[in-house]
Length: 139
Length: 139
Length: 139
Length: 139
Image 1 (spheres, chains in turn green, orange, yellow, brown):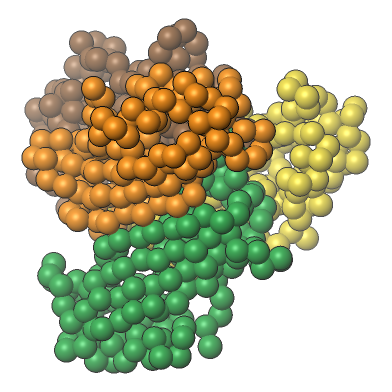
Image 2 (cartoon, rainbow over the protein chains, first blue to last red; image 1 turned 30 degrees about the vertical axis):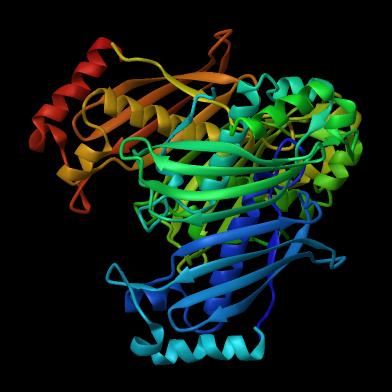
């Protein structure tokens, strides 16, 4: 089981509406994504050693309620789609205390090796299995 | 006619992939949006004086090619949809020299006054007309 | 005793030198400062309720060694000087595993209430005592 | 003569005090520094082609007055000290309209080539001369 990722809202993340600036949620999605990879045992250090990069192809976010300085949020990332070549993840940002949903979002990715796209399925079957397991088990 | 918005890429906008971090494009959309409002004569100072805020309800971005430090990009924002209560804008980020598309995106917004949603159509017909004109004239 | 503040380095904090961009350390100082205030029982929510703000008058940072994505750092903040009207803090950023010093820095502050500077000593003796205790006990 | 560097304040640079977050001035110093190098004809592209990097060793900033969203500031960078091995720059951030000083600051740097410190004086006399001229002519 994945441990949910927590983020404490910082002062520098606020804007003059006295809420978290909307661009920061995109950064929090990245934080949660990196955390999931680490929990799966394929954190950045390992991927880098293999020469694998996972660039962002697209990102989207729907803002529901506002987050403020001092709040702690939980970001729940899930593998929505994976076929060995493409990865799609979803995110849900919730207040850690009340559970109220702050925003939801998605990101899609491919896998790069030596500057070109690769199929994890063909080249890195162990990592491929990890992502497939996430997909099945709803993580 | 709107003057296209230019942004020069800063060093602090890069990440360790030696490209602009994907979250910054969301910020550039905001820069272009503010610039359009200013060119329309309803820049932040004026909106604030009227007590109107235009929060972001959703945002999305499709990354096409990479932007690097020192590049200058043009961000073309357009009003995609407007009905007096909701506003939807599209963005196209292009290299200023080559015209190559870096990314495209959208954002949707409502209008707030005194903490609650308002219809610009009913309350601020002049501003309403400006947005409608943008919609018709493809700006 | 204060609990040392931890920060896990995020991908979006790196720049194209593959190290943390130097501006982020200034943000980490703020994180540690807020954490100390919270541990003292005068976190932002409480200060805000009292109408007190603690703006930054100056900041400085000496970079010693580089921090990279995935590293965890400890930021030790201390009260260097306090006289009821002015506050000066020092910061030491260390690698959480090796203890190697990444950077050191300082920030100076005053206290604002209702838009003007105030003496905590005269107006908020309880908070004043907390800062004085920090100064004496080396926290 | 150097052309002064202009920066238009963005919404995402504000914090909940409705002013520019203090960390952003450190980023503006970098913007002005890069602009000066470019005006000197030794912009990042050229330095990179030569394999030269100019890391930040220290930075400081004294905040005088507040900058707000929509303001335009001028950042005047000057070479304070240069000896071929070390470079020290000063910065003055002023409101573009009123000339009121927002903050002043400094940064110090060394020069790296192939991972190690170098003397520009010995290895790159042309660049060395450019910095010396800046120092003499007060730019």
